[in-house]
Length: 352
Image (tube, rainbow, N blue to C red; front, side):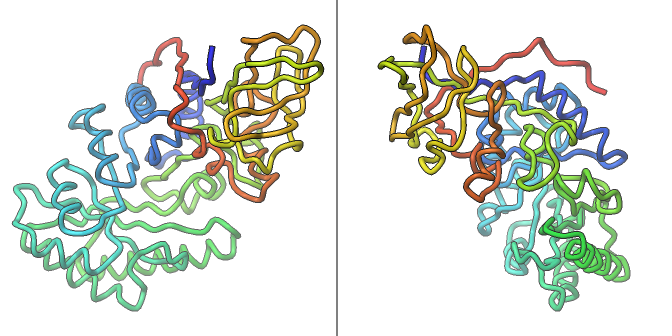
């Protein structure tokens, strides 16, 4: 045996059902950036599509193209990292929904050949997070550019969107006011979006007014709770991935396993958490580049499996993240792509 990242697709399906119930009547846009939060894009997208997910947040055009290859022509795939004319052209060719938060991209779009089908543009208003987006003082100018693209058949105003900080209710309330004002200005200019989307996981679960038509939920779909927030049980989600190491050496009262900080477990966590062994939780004493040292147990043997964190483990990704002042996604995304992903499933349920 060797180290693996074990992914339970049935647990993933249960999370998707929980997300769907929590954000209704809005629709779930499953965010699959960074290889589906390191869980493996193809199998995650395949199962999500079988479970009835119709919208995917793919981040960039390359990921959008990969999602399209799995699900075919009917899915809606939203991308928002667009670097210029070539990304725009490729996104249109791959039938992707384009998240645009820069006037320069609207100008690039205007200089492309008129597409056979108008580009589906989701225009982003900066509501204060400054993670790109059109500044409020430039919003009317951007709407004028977009109006020209719509009139010429280059684009369709498919969506209005933004990111929010989800740091405090007061900050998010202020952001939502900017968002609503931007939509009112667009409608007054004759541009009514088909979809509006503002919330991600936390606000989508906790704050009904923020849900709009779509909610972009990534972390919760994979069972990753927010740092400093409600627990998995309170949210009704469960981790779907577990990092499983194999014992390679037994020495007196310690064992060595085949996962280290180069595989994604931060060395700063040494001595601060326990892994799950065949005999129960045992302290992780040292995290070296390619191996780690764990307190031993009676009968420990080479080949024994140890769950370092995640599903089946004593600590979740967010448990570890909180120990080093980061977020659960950061821990999950550190899992090396060189560690094989192994999937378990009893099969997809019928789409709801």
